[in-house]
Length: 189
Image 1 (tube, rainbow, N blue to C red):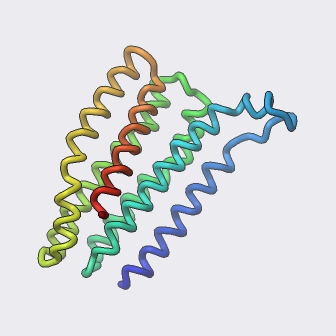
Image 2: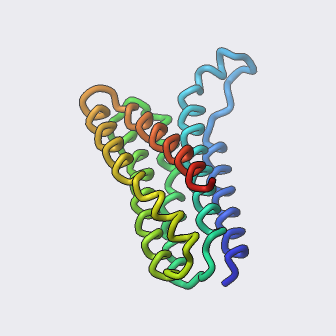
């Protein structure tokens, strides 16, 4: 399968996911700032979810421009990641309706953790599929240091979310995602 065709499929799925997230934000009762302020939590949850989806798209793009060999294992592994990502609209709605709930925040954060685990597994599969692709191997090896930092960050945010304030889990996701974006810029340069 051609990588460009596969990337186009992933792009379309991600566009649908983002559309589903924004459609869940209720329209304010009145056309004024006070009514808009009432749905601020929904917009915050959307913002974080949007950046997660964009970050996955960007990482996926940066990875696939380096892939020379695309096989069914890589395709199915990528689709597993898209399956995980498809839960974001559901958990975005849950967390926006129950923002201070540890359970809702933990479910939302678990999507980010699962996506991170998926990316690590997918990177290993891709390295084994195309071991002669030096540019790909260097790119993936440079990114391995992110895993430990993000694992520690997720652990701390879950502990603080449980004992102190549940939305700190979302803050942890936002920090991890920001770190991922910054380090991805470093990896692509």
